[in-house]
Length: 348
Image (cartoon, rainbow, N blue to C red; front, side):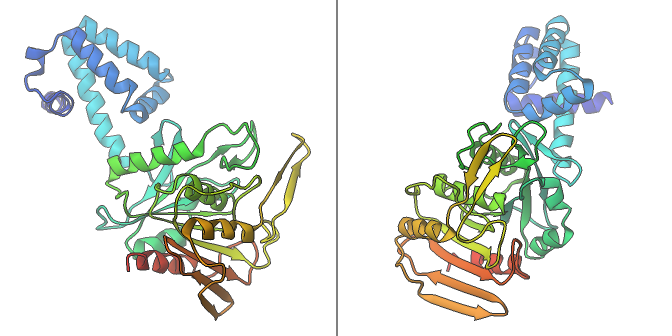
């Protein structure tokens, strides 16, 4: 154990200070400051794990460690070594269905196929009341992506109000969502890039229902978050944005008979909080995308087969397609295949 701790201390030192012979160059106060800074900033997810298991607040855990460093250099080195070893383990072990990866604003799950290395990644936003763990529990969906060489990241939304189901902070007029999910998704992708080697240039953002609406919001207001966007069964809510920030690659899928999110939009009133929110018209939303991408009003390509209607606009910038299916509030059979085929053709 002693040799392993010694290796960890040296590794910690090499990684975070770029110096060898830690005890020769650093006093206890300097080590205390270094460790506390690491714990307070880039290793928030690790501190969260430690503090949760010990029932100690993260900042208090940092203060306790700092005091140990000030009292004993040897004790400080041991804590730093254990901290480093635990960090190595947590970085590798999180992300499964039962063990989420933690970022400052929330959590996500990830499934990585065999022999995947810096390959393409789908980030999928679940529907109302669901979670990232449930997305990973859909073995058929996970396996479909894995068979094509895609990793899957599934973030989890927060309850929209105390005691309420998970929901995304879609721009729908409700002003008291507990989190700005656009910032949260940026944190998730940044963490996955650093932790798992996800390539930020090969990300496809998808989502269903309210998750699909969140995809529309992200594509409009932060178009560089992903290479392409494939929402389903969700669109803008009122008030609709007047314009979007930049052209995007977007493929939208919608059920022709969807009663939950009708193509024409609808209003929804919550008696408990006495608030009404309204879904925007999907057709009006598509007009906004045509404006952003500088597309003609009329689609240039049409395809009908097996209960699927597809429209494609030839735009000056980005790409825009619509898939309608004969079903309701759901995904058509073969949706993942259609989306990945479209995504892979963007480079051509």
